Length: 474
Ligand code: SF4
Picture 1: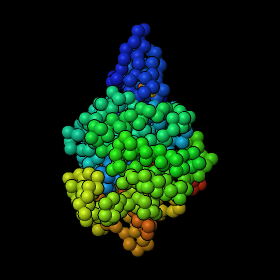
Picture 2: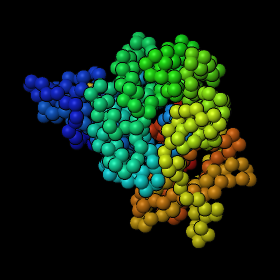
Picture 3: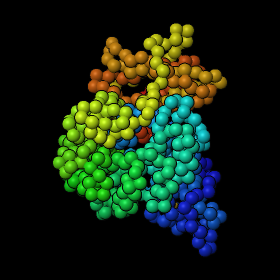
């Protein structure tokens, strides 16, 4: 594992006798002897000092939308740059990112190297106003997150932290100055569930969530409703009680659809009717904004004014359209606080053209949505020494297409974005690449799964991930 060879000085280190160190990043407080590593496998004792082994080691940076992160009340539809790393301080039986959260499965070929400056540069060049620290879990990437988020903040970029939040209060204090949005995944409110399924424990997660809420940060809470395990009304009620008692009724709460993964593949995706019942429990108890996650065709992903009922934001999957919220985050009909924070520039999008340049011979890759596959990772690469333009569009029906969005790629740049079905009638997406560029389409459920498997392995069983690549182009 080449990616683990170099260590970076770690924060939150306590030095103990005999060159032993203790890590105070997560509540485990691992005591680590020379040459050993902690539970997360990415913090180690090298010569009596605590080091981070994954500083700048990442999965491919990916452009998505903010809805992907169970954040519905911060500039709906905002484009985000998602950054995920390696390792985790938990080990959930159903992990949706297990190929990177469990460091032993990570192969060198799937690891990308970034500096803080490069991450900020990617976001700026592609006019993305939010960096999301996400996937496996940003907690175990603490040094890289804190340093890069500070640079991003100085560049006027918003930082979003999507985490299971099994983290120490000291580490949270280091995040508060640089993180704007916390999207916190609370797996359950049952201590036994935490011990058994996540191998962590509950109290620090709840305390940490309250800590960032009290610090005035934008907080949204989500709970994965695991089929026959936690997709019941009691879980929904317990989560709602926590939000109401220790946070506030305005905190958006998401009940998220599970898909079989990792050690839990002998089950099915969460039935939608159980999610709808959970949502109703939250609403009946007094939460103002309760949503379903990882679902497409339901009214339960839209935002309505809690006061007058005005439709404020419509969503389809990972795409959103603002209809009734002012730039100050108020309802356009009654003026009530929608608890939606806006980015002054709004959502910036790439330039578009009606037609492809006639003088370039493009290769075009297309993909049609089918079944539950309604999201796609599109990876494009410029293999030349000149800047190149790659184009993509949505095929809205057999006869109707969107304009082509233009992606400027620097020499040798690789860029990845997620295209999710944006309306019921949409047929699929098309990517047009010029000579010296390549593209590949990786079909996924719902959101990100890294790394996706090779084209000729995996299965098309609609309820099991990971899914295979769709025909790589050239
Ligand atoms: S981050 Fe947590 S799991 Fe990793 S070494 Fe530190 S205390 Fe242990």
